[in-house]
Length: 136
Length: 136
DNA sequence: TATAAAACCTCTAGTGACTAGAGGTTCAAG
DNA sequence: CTTGAACCTCTAGTCACTAGAGGTTTTATA
Image (cartoon, rainbow over all chains, first blue to last red; front, side, top):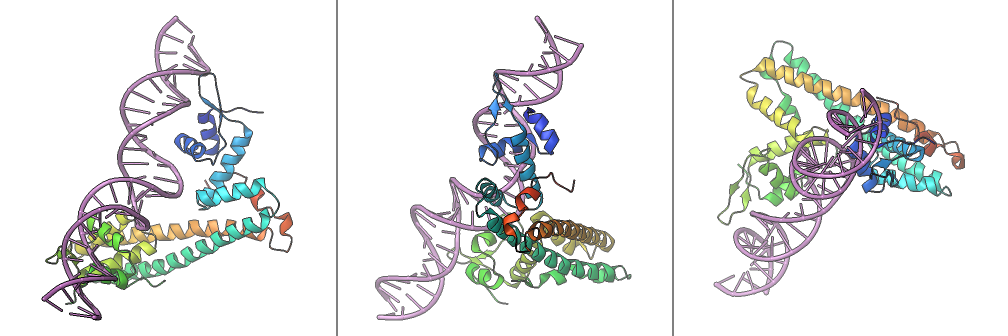
């Protein structure tokens, strides 16, 4: 089984070194073995876990959600249902965010278009954004 | 012109009271007048600005970006071309954000649907998340 | 007009998810 | 054996708030 220094692990996973140490500190990564001189030594279990965490983070899961998913990994019993629930809830959040941003993009597009017609002095960007939030 | 206490302003804008004070502290809101007894008194200028800020925040702009947009407003009469450029850049940012979120949603959808066919006991959700990040 | 309760004030500290820097130690190549 | 890269711990900073303590002002009612 391969053994990695923190720098090697960082390179493989594209995760910064302080972030790896931070994950260990908050029990997202299992505590690493140490060398004679007290430097961290990782194995493939750490590598797999870190890939999992970074993938989840890239998908926008919070570390708390990731902690739940990790827990579900280790106790397989009812894991799929709950994991499905977490992922589905997150998906709904993302879809909602997309809808909101599309509304804004439409607004901005209108503004930019109107401004490019040679009437930039009438730019309405702030007026458009002045009204209260549409959603919620 | 109407005058509001911080509590009234909070209610109208659905913005929490400490957040309003925070915005004043970091110069996102103009400093409020004070009553005899040192309590903040707001007017419609503050109301308008706060609505603007909350709208932008709801749409994912950072406070720094909002600061720029505010600056853009006061500048636009004097530098319409520059203002247009800034507005357009913001539009591009938003479009890019939408693209990223759509990629993310597609992947989440895949994750969620891997076990939606009534066979959740075979759910691959946790395995799917083990592979390294797809994008970047 | 007195009082009580609601609303306000400032200040400090905490959140999540890192990131940066100081100052010191260990490892590996030549 | 030396030197420089990589590592160590610890503290503090980032963003955008949020919570709580402890005290003051405003306002509604008796």
